[in-house]
Length: 165
Image (spheres, rainbow, N blue to C red):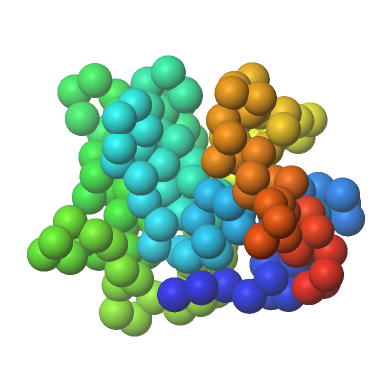
């Protein structure tokens, strides 16, 4: 299930985000989750969830994030996969993918994602997101650069978002 750019922009604005912050977060959402509520990345050293792909690994502050959101945790303090899925309004499918749980409204999905974003973001820069130029490894990540700036065939995030909004 996708959120529209217009709805995401409105919800961010309603939470007090500035126009520049909204532009950045709508662009980040495009690159991180493709606007899909059920986006989840369990690969390598990642355990990212939701629209903004909030990372719940130990090195990303997963213990503190789980505590702040009241998630059930394992012995190491990191959140359980089932707890994360429930928080983000998702269910695990037979193939290991996730989808929105029956009966969960778009409003509930938006609230969970924005609450998680506000809990983890420092309010200053966008360095936690690999698709943003503030990220320390952005210059080494050609995919991220292509997504952000665009290619001959595809507009970059900011250009795309500016055109749509």
